[in-house]
Image (cartoon, rainbow, N blue to C red; front, side, top):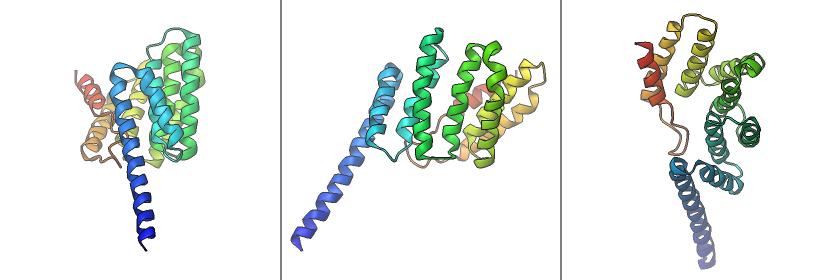
Length: 206
């Protein structure tokens, strides 16, 4: 009986230790993000290698790379950068299929290419981006990031074709309402977007 109790205590201790290491690693990666994004992405990737059933580390490793992509001007560098991000998105998708958060990130990766060279990639990727946001909206219509990112994409498309963007401002307002009541599953689940929604809505009112 004593041996069984010791074994259970050992198992529980191991679980707690593993959780603690995961939490410490994730917190460290988030801290690095502000000062050294590349190292942050690498750390998220290392955590993903240890947390094989958890989509979040791969998601964040990819997100860092995708957001960096908007600043990269060299095509070869950008291609390598986004290729690595795509592999990480694929890893996250394998773990968590039909996940609206991962879909948003996939759409953003395509958007990086459109932002880099709209003449080359706009016609090719715009339908894919619209389809991703459409699917994400069907799966998770009350996710504030889905509502926000879809509205921003629709606004950009409307501007490109010289159409009125005002109708999409209502979607931004709805996104903010959803942010007000949004509760992430854990402290590490995606929570971003509220400040961006406030900025977009402010621009709507100018």
